[in-house]
Length: 145
Image (cartoon, rainbow, N blue to C red; front, side, top):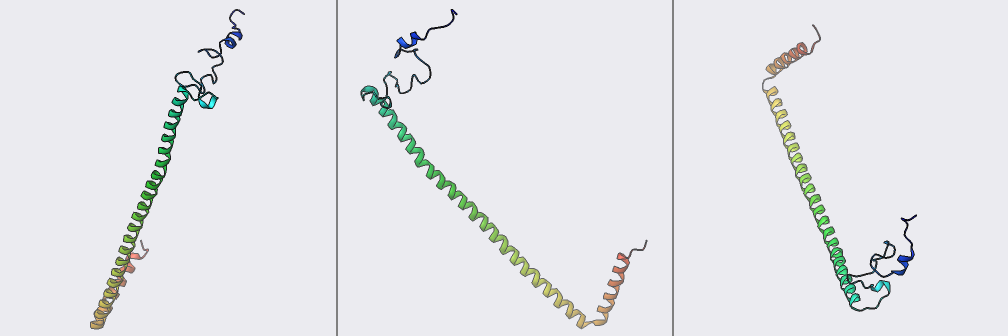
Protein backbone atom coordinates (compact mmCIF):
# COMPACT_ATOMS: atom_id res chain seq x y z
CA UNK A 1 0.00 0.00 0.00
CA UNK A 2 2.93 2.25 -0.59
CA UNK A 3 1.36 3.62 -3.80
CA UNK A 4 -1.57 5.24 -2.02
CA UNK A 5 -1.47 8.97 -1.28
CA UNK A 6 -3.07 10.50 1.72
CA UNK A 7 -5.85 13.00 1.35
CA UNK A 8 -4.49 15.34 4.01
CA UNK A 9 -1.95 16.80 1.56
CA UNK A 10 -4.73 18.10 -0.59
CA UNK A 11 -6.55 19.54 2.38
CA UNK A 12 -3.47 21.46 3.56
CA UNK A 13 -2.76 22.93 0.13
CA UNK A 14 -6.19 24.29 -0.75
CA UNK A 15 -5.73 27.35 -2.88
CA UNK A 16 -2.40 26.23 -4.28
CA UNK A 17 -2.12 25.07 -7.86
CA UNK A 18 -2.48 21.33 -8.25
CA UNK A 19 -4.24 20.82 -4.96
CA UNK A 20 -7.71 19.52 -4.29
CA UNK A 21 -10.03 17.78 -6.64
CA UNK A 22 -9.69 18.46 -10.34
CA UNK A 23 -13.44 18.81 -10.67
CA UNK A 24 -14.35 22.48 -10.56
CA UNK A 25 -11.17 23.78 -8.97
CA UNK A 26 -10.76 26.45 -11.64
CA UNK A 27 -14.39 27.50 -11.78
CA UNK A 28 -14.80 31.17 -11.15
CA UNK A 29 -11.09 31.97 -11.39
CA UNK A 30 -9.75 34.45 -13.90
CA UNK A 31 -6.31 34.52 -15.53
CA UNK A 32 -4.67 36.13 -12.48
CA UNK A 33 -6.01 33.48 -10.12
CA UNK A 34 -8.68 35.67 -8.50
CA UNK A 35 -12.17 34.46 -7.85
CA UNK A 36 -14.92 36.04 -9.91
CA UNK A 37 -18.06 37.82 -8.80
CA UNK A 38 -20.13 34.68 -9.04
CA UNK A 39 -17.93 33.04 -6.40
CA UNK A 40 -18.45 35.89 -3.94
CA UNK A 41 -15.16 37.81 -4.20
CA UNK A 42 -14.79 41.55 -4.16
CA UNK A 43 -14.72 43.61 -7.35
CA UNK A 44 -11.02 44.41 -7.42
CA UNK A 45 -8.73 44.07 -10.46
CA UNK A 46 -9.82 40.51 -11.12
CA UNK A 47 -13.48 41.52 -10.92
CA UNK A 48 -12.93 44.18 -13.56
CA UNK A 49 -11.43 41.58 -15.90
CA UNK A 50 -14.43 39.34 -15.34
CA UNK A 51 -16.82 42.21 -15.94
CA UNK A 52 -14.98 43.07 -19.16
CA UNK A 53 -15.13 39.44 -20.31
CA UNK A 54 -18.79 39.22 -19.40
CA UNK A 55 -19.53 42.43 -21.30
CA UNK A 56 -17.75 41.02 -24.35
CA UNK A 57 -19.78 37.82 -24.07
CA UNK A 58 -22.99 39.85 -23.79
CA UNK A 59 -22.01 41.78 -26.93
CA UNK A 60 -21.34 38.52 -28.77
CA UNK A 61 -24.68 37.13 -27.65
CA UNK A 62 -26.43 40.33 -28.74
CA UNK A 63 -24.74 40.15 -32.16
CA UNK A 64 -25.86 36.53 -32.56
CA UNK A 65 -29.38 37.42 -31.45
CA UNK A 66 -29.48 40.35 -33.87
CA UNK A 67 -28.17 38.14 -36.70
CA UNK A 68 -30.80 35.45 -36.11
CA UNK A 69 -33.80 37.61 -37.12
CA UNK A 70 -31.86 38.92 -40.11
CA UNK A 71 -31.07 35.36 -41.16
CA UNK A 72 -34.69 34.37 -40.66
CA UNK A 73 -35.77 37.38 -42.73
CA UNK A 74 -33.37 36.42 -45.52
CA UNK A 75 -34.65 32.85 -45.41
CA UNK A 76 -38.27 34.01 -45.51
CA UNK A 77 -37.50 36.43 -48.35
CA UNK A 78 -35.82 33.73 -50.42
CA UNK A 79 -38.71 31.34 -49.71
CA UNK A 80 -41.22 33.98 -50.83
CA UNK A 81 -39.15 34.63 -53.95
CA UNK A 82 -39.14 30.89 -54.71
CA UNK A 83 -42.91 30.68 -54.31
CA UNK A 84 -43.36 33.71 -56.57
CA UNK A 85 -41.06 32.15 -59.18
CA UNK A 86 -43.02 28.88 -59.14
CA UNK A 87 -46.29 30.80 -59.29
CA UNK A 88 -45.03 32.74 -62.33
CA UNK A 89 -43.92 29.55 -64.06
CA UNK A 90 -47.28 27.89 -63.40
CA UNK A 91 -49.14 30.97 -64.59
CA UNK A 92 -47.11 30.97 -67.82
CA UNK A 93 -47.71 27.25 -68.30
CA UNK A 94 -51.42 27.72 -67.68
CA UNK A 95 -51.58 30.56 -70.20
CA UNK A 96 -49.65 28.50 -72.76
CA UNK A 97 -51.96 25.50 -72.30
CA UNK A 98 -54.97 27.79 -72.59
CA UNK A 99 -53.66 29.33 -75.81
CA UNK A 100 -52.83 25.91 -77.31
CA UNK A 101 -56.28 24.64 -76.37
CA UNK A 102 -57.88 27.59 -78.16
CA UNK A 103 -55.66 27.02 -81.21
CA UNK A 104 -56.57 23.32 -81.30
CA UNK A 105 -60.26 24.10 -80.98
CA UNK A 106 -60.01 26.63 -83.83
CA UNK A 107 -58.08 24.12 -85.99
CA UNK A 108 -60.75 21.46 -85.35
CA UNK A 109 -63.55 23.87 -86.24
CA UNK A 110 -61.69 24.91 -89.39
CA UNK A 111 -61.06 21.27 -90.43
CA UNK A 112 -64.67 20.29 -89.77
CA UNK A 113 -65.99 23.24 -91.75
CA UNK A 114 -63.62 22.47 -94.65
CA UNK A 115 -64.78 18.82 -94.65
CA UNK A 116 -68.43 19.85 -94.70
CA UNK A 117 -67.77 22.23 -97.57
CA UNK A 118 -66.03 19.47 -99.58
CA UNK A 119 -68.86 16.98 -98.98
CA UNK A 120 -71.45 19.60 -100.11
CA UNK A 121 -69.50 20.47 -103.25
CA UNK A 122 -68.83 16.87 -104.40
CA UNK A 123 -70.99 14.32 -102.58
CA UNK A 124 -70.27 11.37 -104.91
CA UNK A 125 -66.51 11.65 -104.56
CA UNK A 126 -66.88 11.96 -100.79
CA UNK A 127 -68.92 8.75 -100.60
CA UNK A 128 -66.39 6.84 -102.75
CA UNK A 129 -63.48 8.11 -100.60
CA UNK A 130 -65.37 7.07 -97.47
CA UNK A 131 -66.05 3.57 -98.88
CA UNK A 132 -62.40 3.12 -99.91
CA UNK A 133 -61.18 4.24 -96.49
CA UNK A 134 -63.62 1.87 -94.74
CA UNK A 135 -62.61 -1.10 -96.90
CA UNK A 136 -58.88 -0.41 -96.33
CA UNK A 137 -59.34 -0.13 -92.56
CA UNK A 138 -61.38 -3.34 -92.42
CA UNK A 139 -58.62 -5.26 -94.27
CA UNK A 140 -55.90 -3.82 -92.03
CA UNK A 141 -57.75 -4.53 -88.83
CA UNK A 142 -59.21 -7.95 -89.73
CA UNK A 143 -57.84 -10.98 -87.89
CA UNK A 144 -57.44 -13.29 -90.85
CA UNK A 145 -54.11 -15.02 -91.12
